[in-house]
Length: 90
Length: 410
Image (cartoon, rainbow over all chains, first blue to last red; front, side, top):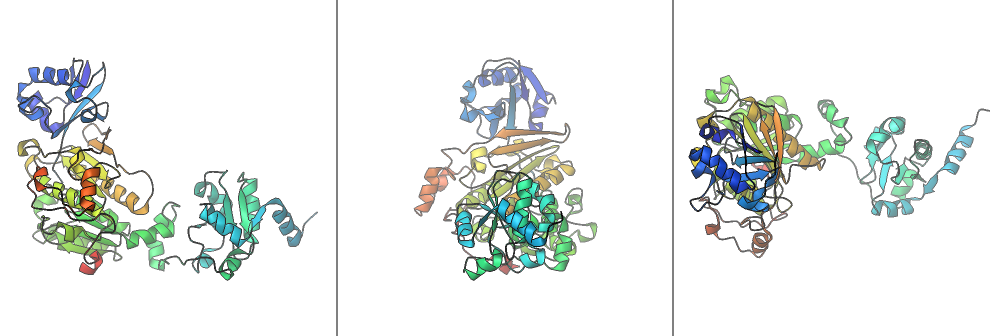
């Protein structure tokens, strides 16, 4: 299982929790496991074509998956996956 | 057997290596560290450019902090070559095997027409005001003089800009520009500590001027009471050394990013949401820019501002001060900035997390291709930009800054 950290702005869509333990061998599998439990997140994370939205960054152990293998980036047990959308507030 | 001064000096000189001013100048060109061991009053009259100042009386006390590497070659000098000979001998006893003394001292150096410079002399009042900075070797009077000559632009005098403005002003950043067209509202005061209850209804720029003038009269505040838009952004940011992004809209953040990359000005970025903050430093072409981090803005419902979502007042306070810290490091050229790293802060957990950022090789603003196009005088096509910014990149990069100096617009 990997830990997926949910940013505050998305927490209302996942029942208010800060992180979830999810199973999956790639980032894409984790995202789909997340969306199965919380379908409301779909539009925020993925494009209609099923790619990651460009305004949400996904990091595996601190590394941006856009510079790894995107949704195909492999994820190991106990990896930390972090969803991070841009913030506007100043 | 007590020794005479002459015997002591002879002994010291025999135990160290002496170099004459011409040899010393060659070593200086190779990057060898020079230590001026004279008194402060002598240093203030002029010194060898690049030299560090550690008075003979503090040499044993301060050398380890000033030069931690005991193998580093060092050239010590004083006025005539006596104090530096004793100093070099002492340093050898401390394990600085490559400490040398310059024969003939600063007098011979000047007589041979070698380069020297005079320091910016801080007034008595400034020496007291900045004494805690002057005690830090990494700042010192040269660094403080640099801060006093620096120009920092704050985009917004709100939650992030307020604490940053106060601490940058206190630190003696000589010119602080503030872009804000808003007026002080009572709901701002929960976090915007630059303003005050009796200034509700005033323009934020005016309120900021009052607060900063009361804190530090050394600081010139330049007010830009306008909204940052495509037509004015190049003019407003021209001439500033560093920009602190404390805005609350994506339009302004992208606009600022694009213009600052084009002008070659570093931007210290932060944003906040309720209990969370994000922070990084964008140094054009050395690290990623805002578009590399977030190629497109999120839809409004996914990124509400503080006025919609709320924010714990201390969060922009903490993030704004971390921005001020980045600004000071960039200005002083010390430490390691957050370029290429995103620091995220979670106030509820009291947790900082660091994420790695990269330059996007396909970035429409800061990629090598975009940079080359800009240098050829070709502005990247506006269609490349997902945010509707009526703005064409035309800046030529470092050295291409036009317009009047910011302090002239005070």
